Amino acid sequence: MWRVVADICAVDSYCCQVSWDSLCVGEVASVCGQSCEPDPAECVHDKCDQGGFLDPTCDGCVSQVCDADPFCCETNWDWLCVNEVSSVCSETCN
Image (cartoon, rainbow, N blue to C red):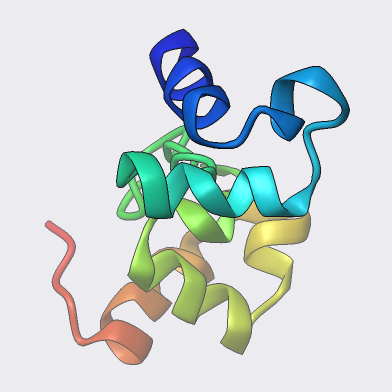
């Protein structure tokens, strides 16, 4: 991380001397070839297992199931959500 900041400050001193603004954030990609996007969340349990609600960003199929059935990502990932892995995503759970 510090290397990215140093590289950007070397080409745009404003970022380190005055303010780290949206242009500086944009330079993370243009100067350093990196992203400021957070890593996707990890699923707290497998989509084929019942358990607590899942973060829709942890898996593409989980996102599709949550779009179809918000309960799965707001309240609880129950047996209906597990079944929707097949019906919504065409994936198979053992």
